[in-house]
Image (tube, rainbow, N blue to C red; front, side):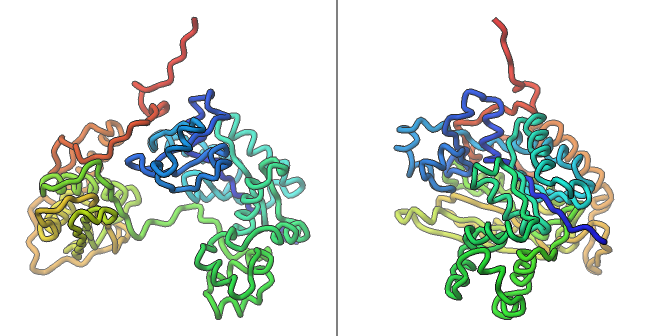
Length: 429
């Protein structure tokens, strides 16, 4: 007799905030929030901030009075720190299961089938204890026979303190009781628009959705929605992806700390973004066949002239070479740029992505520069190694060292785990 599947979703609590608190224990029970690029919006909130009913993604200037009144500690996003702490958490999680899917920077699915069938809740508390003990990051654990139910269980583990941070939905009766209380919008993959459409059909709770005929949901919505209904009923339809699928699009863009008016400044920023996108492309051993570039002014300032344009080009040969992509990006930018505007943002998108090992079709009439393609892989690998070791040590092709356009942050904590110069110092008096 085959065993019932058991999937766990382990999700870090308020991950960015938890990373900041890890090296500031004095803030453990204080209201803390982490801000987005340019310190514009709240992207992570402690439970104390959530209790003040401050919503996610709200611009910080709109809640400045609450920040002052309740002494909320604000931090600029410190992504090197968050990425390193995520790697530590994920490495530990892989010791609990032979099959792990890293779903995002702060959550992962674990296949626990046959590992802890007798007492899954105790095993969930064991995972929670080890992660907090060895990394300092608090987590919640949701358990269920499918990925969708594990997600739902994790929601309950975070929502209700009585659960202690671990919820198991393997039991159909307990599953039904919980789904009666959970709005349908909290089901994995059901966004606000879908929940509104479901509400028109009288589907308000997770249980309402689970009780719908699968074929009827498929006809009215999609195959994906039908699979969600099956998963809510304990029928696995989504397998764990032990190896994350390659990205089919890579986008890199930023808002500027000040408005840019000169072509030179925009071209330097664009070269930086192309370099970052190409690094991501090479990290998954892929090449891109299409490039898009966009620039725009500030759409929220009606007092200034508005301008927004984008353009794309099919690359002659699918590539991962930063030099080739930067060259094409600058050619597109020359056509897009118009003087007399104050540009707030630009960006690049790589698409038509395929594995680097895929045979490519060369242009019969294209004359390749001798040695250009031959040295490309080795040169790009060397550049990536240098950038990993010295993140600020190498300039992007066609970019200068003057990066006044870059986002300025005022509340950035130290990179405690990734930079020798910023290690935490403890003094004993």
